[in-house]
Image 1 (tube, rainbow, N blue to C red):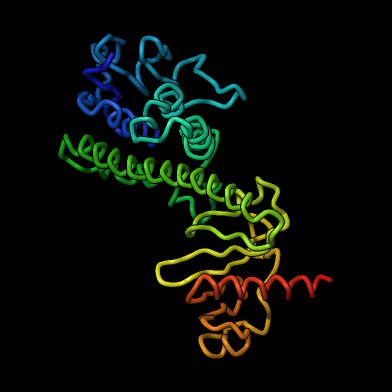
Image 2: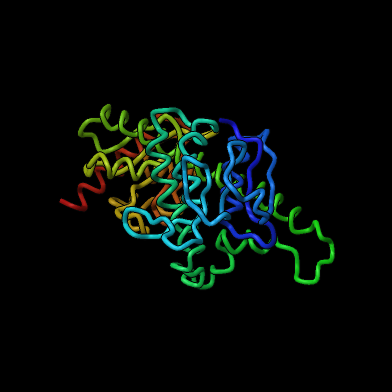
Amino acid sequence: MIPDFLVTHSGGFHADEVLSSAVLTRLFPQARLVRSRAPEWTTPGADRIVYDVGGIYDAPARIFDHHQRGAPLRDDGRPYSSFGLVWKHFGRDYLAAIPVPDAFIESVHAAFDASFVLPVDLVDNGALSPDSAGLLAGLTLPTLLETLKPVFDERDTEATDRAFHAATAIARSFVEAKIEGMHAKLRAEALVFRAIETVGKGRVLELPMGMPFRPAIVKAGADHLLFVVHPRESDWCLTGIRRNEEGFELRADLPAAWAGLTERDLEAATGVEGAVFCHSGRFIAAARTREAALALADLAVRGSEQRAG
């Protein structure tokens, strides 16, 4: 049943009910969002969804609080906040509404829960401190959303509600951008897998455009690949593949003789007409055409194999 009301508590707000509101108002745009602690609102009813208030977690009754004794826990024993509960029960519908294609919904739902929802749950329950982010503690999303609350001596009685709605709109932009990024990575993964099949045992992976490629290469076990080539807006890019998710060490560097060269100097050093640029760090180069980029890649592979052999 489509709700007429989305009910959360009044007063100061935190990231969990703000993010819950971002999800639910996207799913049910016609519903009125009510911020109240009055029992006539926080009691379950057929016309509403209640969250982060009410003292009960009862999914069939559509009430999702986590402050009571015996509050719900994840399978691994970690606590839910209202955001985690709302995501558990409404996240898949939300993804379908954005829309994320059916084939990707389960993967995106799980990935978003682990990387975005869970940290909010833990912070809200005091199981994780933003201080663990060190100098970035004040820039974590839960902290930033709370900075939108009115200052202590604000006299306008409606200021907090206005701030809550503003925070909800901002939170929705982060949620949807994060989800779109996750969906994009899955689309990229499918393209990279196909390109890996095409290249076989070759050392250079050619992609149809720039995209995240390292996770799919690792997932595919394509340890033989050394370089990636793809078109950009006006030229072609040749780039190395990092050995690890952290750090900058590559499976193979571009030749030292190319470092920092551009245009004619690089053409002279490589013998490749159309070579444009090689970064001094030897992790990326550019060429005017596909043929030139592939020629540079072939030279880079041969140089790497000679150094290794």
